[in-house]
Amino acid sequence: MSALSDQLIMYATLTYLVAMISHAVEYALGNARAVSAKAATPARELVGAGVGGAGGTVEEPVTPAESRHSRSAARAALAGRIATWLTTLAVALHLGAVVSRGIAAERMPWGNMYEFVLTVTFIGAAAWLAVLWKQPSLRRLGLFLTLVMVLLLAFAQFKFYVQVSPLMPALQSYWFVVHVSTIIFASGIFLLGVVPAVAYLMRAGWEQGRRSFPYTLARRLPAAAGLERMTFALHAFAFPIFTFAVIAGAIWAEAAWGRAWGWDPKETWAFISWVVYAGYLHARATPSIKRNVATWIAILGFLTMLMNLFGVNFFFTGLHSYAGVS
Image (tube, rainbow, N blue to C red):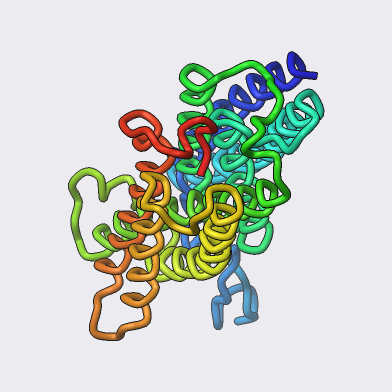
């Protein structure tokens, strides 16, 4: 089962990569109008024309440029549908990798940093499919989501991979399931939430007339207002779950170490992330604070999450170091 998990996550990563390429094709082709407004009206009434003054119609042919636009739009739509199908397949493979890893270890599959990243990215990708099912117009964000998936999964496989091993005695508690599962779920939603946050900043700049890089990447993205609302909705959903996860971790720490909070590096950065995300939600609810300022706070929150996940494990030692998870 361990070998199966390794193969499935490799296939999932490659499938995310092909989905990303398909999204890039759709993004490059754009959604050119199939026909112009003139060609969209195939016939026009001519009053007093024709035999005996009877009304008639005249066909206005589609120009070569309009025909090319139509073919381009059809190819873009096909590439987008293929990208969505491939992303769905990748998520299914990803799920199989996580489940088979858990079966091989005979425990929940998040006992080390490698498994943690695998599960967080799965939550983010699965949540993306749920969002896409509700709002198909956001499909072009899939280019950025699949890019994040490929980078994180490839990094986890090359940097964090470890063989399946039993859970360490210090983690053998029901609080392991409660605390880590909620941290993983909230982190996966925050991971998804940073995608429309970055896209919003680029699109807002484009709508304000900025035509330099990276704003040019946003000319085919959905409207900035919709991206900003999606950013807020995802963060507002994830923040209470993250809050519960931090509280559950404190309760577990009291039971395991005899103190609820000791400013361990993981605990400290979890608190920093909580404060930053709380600051984002407060800023978003304050009319006098511009939406782009609030969005930058959300992005800062995700950077603190990355620091907690990667930086703390690389540069600090503490009571959480043996597991590599929050």
